[in-house]
Length: 125
Image (cartoon, rainbow, N blue to C red; front, top):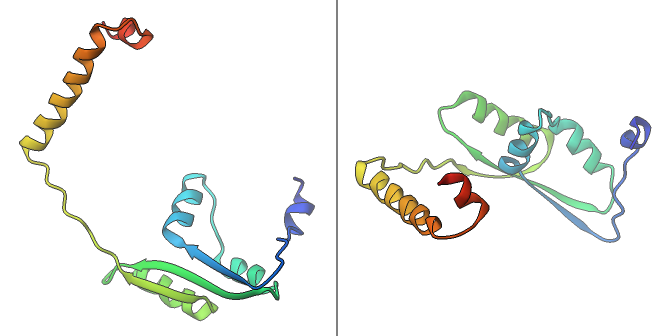
C-alpha cells in the first residue's frame, strides 16, 4: 500500500457501527512496533463515518499517576465515550516454594524427554 492509499483508507461500513477501543491492547501492540497512535486523529477519522454511532474508549486509570490521569482527561476532551476503572495491581508471591514447584515440573518434563528420539532430546542430551 503506497502513502496515498494509506492516507485515503476508508472502512466499508454497512450499518450503524459501534467502535470499541481497548487502549491497553492497542497501545501495547503498537508501542512494541515503535508506532505512536495519535488519539485525536483516530477520533477525527472515526467521526468522518456517518455509520459510527458511538466511539467507546476503555482505559485503566492509575490514580496518583499524573500521566495516566492527564490522558484520561484528554480522551474525554477529545470526545470519546470513556469507560475507565482504577488499575489493579496483583501481588505476586516470589517465595522459594513457588520456584521449587516450577523447577520440579521442568525437570520432570526434561526427564521424560531423555527416553524419546526427538530432535530436541538429542540436542539436550
